[in-house]
Length: 393
Ligand code: PHB
Image 1 (tube, rainbow, N blue to C red):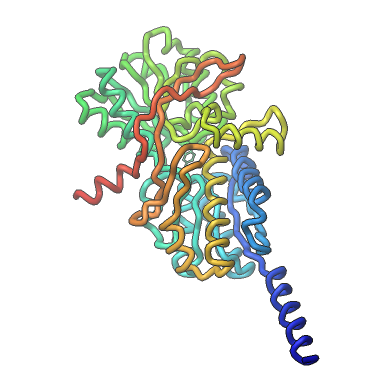
Image 2: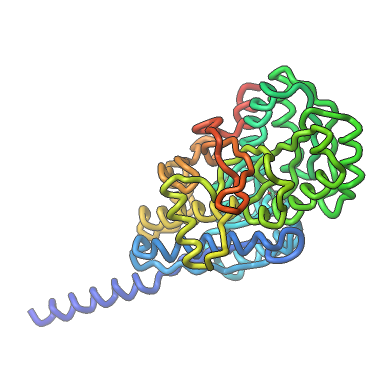
C-alpha cells in the first residue's frame, strides 16, 4: 500500500516534470534589416500573437522561437543560419523567410536534416518542390497574378508588365501574361527591373511611351511599393489614362499611409486585406491593435505567419508534442482552417502549398484612411496554378 502510493506520486511527478520540460524549438529566420527589413517584425509579431492566444492548446509544451536576421535577400546568410540552427541548436522546425532566394538555399538543409520548414512568406511557386519537408502557409505569385490576368483580359486590350528581376517577379510576369493572352489580351512588353534601387523614373517613362491600357507591376512589398506609386504618378501615367494593377504586394497594407492619394483606385488581386470585414479578420486586427498599439495594422506577411503558427500549434496539439518530422509532415498535409482571417484555407496534400481565396480589391478611403477594399472573390479556393499546369504537361 505504502509502496504503491509512493510509486504513484513519483510517477505523477515524473510525468508532470516531463510535460513541463518539453520545449519545441523553432529556428525562425526572417528579415529584420536590409531590403524590406521592416517586414520581419510583422512575421515575428504574428507568430507571438498566435502563440499567446493559443497557449492552452499546447498542453504544457513550451514553444521557443530562436529568431535570426537573414539581412534581406541573402541566400548565403540564410543557409548559414539554418545550418547553425539545425546542427548546433537542434531545432525541431525551421520557419519564416521573406525572400525566395533564402528559402531556396534552406530547402536542401531541411531535406538532409529532416527538419520540417514552414514557409511564411517566400512566394515563388517552385520552392515547395525543392524539399518534401517544406509546407507553405503564405501564397504563390501565380495564385494572385493568374486570376489578375484572367480578370484584366475581360476589361482591357493591352498590358505592359514591370517586375523585380527575381523568382517571384518572373512568376508574376508568367502567370499574368499567360492568363491575359489566353483571355485575348496583348502583352506589349515584359520588362524586368533590378531588385535593389531601380531607376523607376526611367522605367515609367518607357511605359508611358508604350501607352498600354494597363501596367501590371510586381515588386517585393515594403518601401519599394511606395516608390512605384510615387513614380507612376509623378511621370503622369495616371493622367495618360494608364491603369496600375498588380498582385497585392504593390498596395501592401502597411505602406498605404505612406503612399497618399496616388494609390486611390489601384486594383489588385490578393488573399489578404487588413480591411476585410470577415469576423475572423476583424478579431485578428483588433487583437493586433490591442497587443501592438492602435496605430498598428497587420499585413499579408502577418497573416502568412499567423496561419503558420496555427499549423504548428495544431500539430503540437494533435501529436501531443511528438515532433517526429514525418509525422509532422503527414499532419501538415491534412491541415485546414475554415476560419482564417483571410477566409477558408487548407494545405494541398499533393504540393504542400496553401489553397486559399483570391480577392479583387481596390484602394479606397475608408474612415479617412486608405484601405484595400475587397470588391469580389475571384476564386474561392485557388490552388497554385503553376503546379496545376505542370501536372498537365
Ligand atoms: C519573395 O521573395 O518570394 C517575395 C518577397 C516579397 C513579396 C513577395 C514575395 O512581397
